[in-house]
Image 1 (spheres, protein in one colour):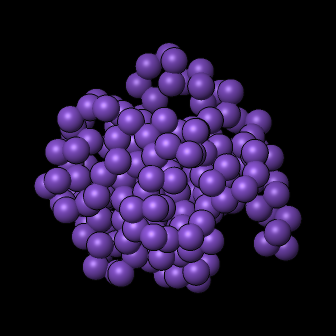
Image 2 (cartoon, rainbow, N blue to C red):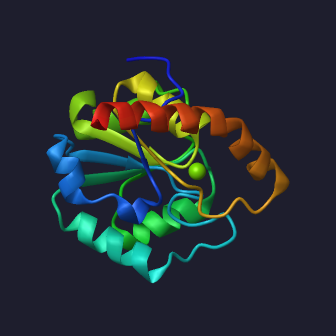
Length: 170
Ligand SMILES: [Mg+2]
């Protein structure tokens, strides 16, 4: 458990996260952010590539759970249509709410769990607080100025995390 703005891993998109990559790290449980990680705020329909990613991940034996701060019906609808468990109003980065609820519901420990999301100040911070592995992906579409500004505020942390990750790899 640590207070940190630095994700453990950075990937271009959710579809770049593979079951093999998770298994290599001993991860059996993957919590997913919804908005701008799975679909942009502006649509409920995922790309074909994203749809295929869900099918393959669900068939891989990795347990999935959507953990979204949103209270909106569209998150639940997406999950219900695909048989994915869903926790809304997760209050990330306060990991004692949604993230802990997800771990307890499925009985996974932090060491075998990960969270993937597009926001450092919610997904990464919350995941690090809970002690799970954190994956940061690029937001699908920052369609308004507030989202763009937030991403600018995240940039120094993304830069630091990339440096740390490249040091670890070399
Ligand atoms: Mg998001």
